[in-house]
Length: 72
Image (cartoon, rainbow, N blue to C red; front, side):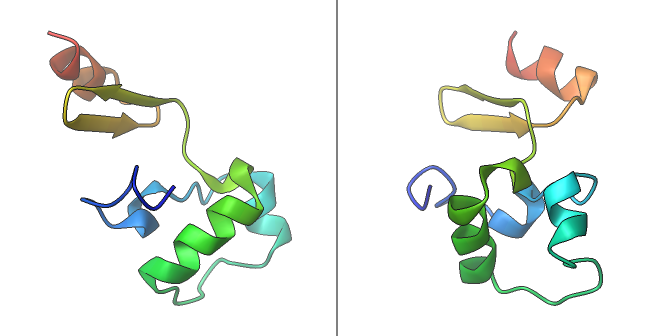
């Protein structure tokens, strides 16, 4: 996970709408990038999905415009 998210802020890849995020009481908490990585490893449902990687670019979530641009 650390290698996958090495060039980005892992906090941007947490899914605040996931049941796991809510169940863990993370709303309003300040997390370090290291905290975010650790939590995603412990609970994979915290990671935004789908996670699409093309070359050196990555898009997480259902952002159609960004996905189209990535897949050109």
